[in-house]
Length: 169
Length: 169
DNA sequence: ATTGGTGCAAAACTTTTGCACGGTA
DNA sequence: TACCGTGCAAAAGTTTTGCACCAAT
Image 1: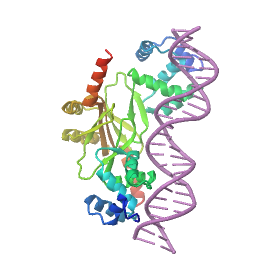
Image 2 (image 1 turned 90 degrees about the vertical axis):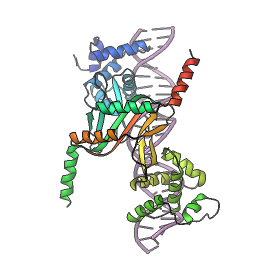
Image 3 (image 1 turned 135 degrees about the horizontal axis):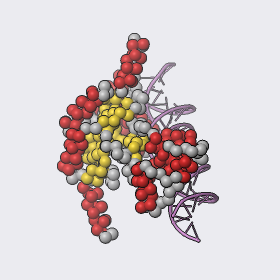
């Protein structure tokens, strides 16, 4: 957010971050004996400014735009840290790539995934959640997380497909 | 296809296969202008004898055991054919790998996936299915398939983890 | 000083594809 | 004969890891 000069890295790490997400991150870092670095701050900052879902590559590109010196590996590993402390969670896209999304103060939800354009639409349904716990119980299975993905076509792609079909008719 | 003695390839392809699954496969092959080959017969045969879930690599290993001359590529591509004609369907495992399972006369179901040992337990719940369609509808989303996976620990792994914890205590 | 962090390059893996040769119809 | 199928090798696309050097505590 800051950006007092040119590099956001400096901005993000120079002052002590107040946002709750950073608190959580710093706590996790301290608790596990890791270290606070400018790169990690910057990566978290960019991630938080992100809407929707990003792959590690996506996030790397965004970060690089603000500080080209940060490497992919660091983004990749930081994303893992963010998962560990509950700031990010991942979703497997329909094509197998791993995407990340915010997971702080974001109630759990599932996804409708358009296999044409890749868009992810979020939804939540209490009943489904309850039934899932019931099912796990019946199988003496200890559920940790779950992933419900409905694949198909979003409205835009349905319209586009329709138009396309008309053209070839 | 030669090799009239010890190899199952011969067994599977020498005579005309009667099983309904083969009917379906042959129909699909004929319908799309493809060709019936000993390799494909053998791969389907092995796949049908398979229980549970296999990756293309897994199936390749099984096939190789009966006919080392069959290559991975053929197994891989045949698995795609089997999907096309509805004999197989795929599930993304928790680690991103693609697994295949029987999909003929097997009503749709979802999975409980143990992240410790990889085991997949199947289940089905009518209510969840209905709610999903409702949700898609509400979003003007045209559902094609879905995947509901509950990750966690199966009973065996819970017990093992418990024992392990006791040991380190 | 220590111990962890970083970026680069390379390794590991899976999934796909290009091609030349051989088989099916 | 005309096409399709097959196996091999290599391409692609990601996710991971090893390492030498740098930075945080």
